Amino acid sequence: MKIKRKLGWKELPSGDFLEAGSSLNFETGDWRSKKPIWDEKKCKSCLFCWVYCPDSAIMVKDKKMIGIDYRYCKGCGICASECPFKAIEMKKEK
Image (cartoon, rainbow, N blue to C red):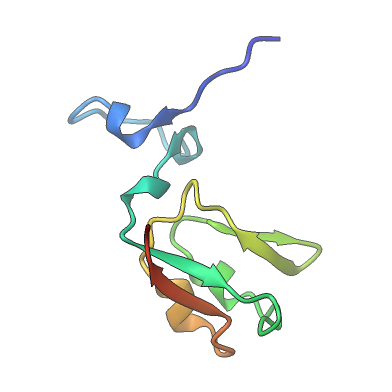
């Protein structure tokens, strides 16, 4: 079985057109300057973060949040803004 390596965003051709649904082929997480930090103890799994995340970076299993996929999170902060329990805090990316 041949394993296909995913391209990073820097490897995309300039001005290229891509087919719909191809975003999973490109890891774009290194764009961010701030990183969402999830506090599992504060989280009530309301999934507002999942609903509003434009990058589908919120990981959910059995209707519960299980983490953030930093390979695709661009650090927009929407998840932190929408969390009514303040379970996600934006921190400067190191």
